[in-house]
Image 1 (tube, rainbow, N blue to C red):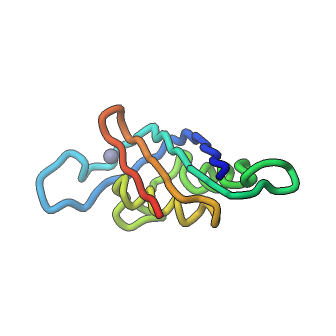
Image 2 (cartoon, protein in one colour):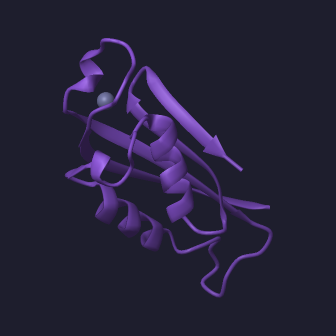
Length: 109
Ligand SMILES: [Zn+2]
C-alpha cells in the first residue's frame, strides 16, 4: 500500500456557537495546519497516489483568508476535518487538523 501525506497551511477565521461561556464565541483566527492522508494499492500514470496539487488548491481556495462559518455551520476542528475529508477525493482515508500546538482533531474512514 502506498501512502501520501500532504500538509497544507491556511489562515482562517471562525466563531463557535457554544452552550457555555467561551471566548471562542467571538470571531477570531487560526493558522491551521491540515494533513491529508491518501493511500492506494497502485500508482497512477504519473507514479503517484493522487494529484496532491488539486487537493491543496481546493482546500486553499475554500479556507485561506476566509470566514469558515460561511462554509460550515459550526466550524469546530472536528467538522473542519470532515469537510476537508469530503473535499479530498476517494484516495483520502484520514485528515488531521491542528488549530494550535495543543489542539488537534482527526477524521478517518
Ligand atoms: Zn477557534
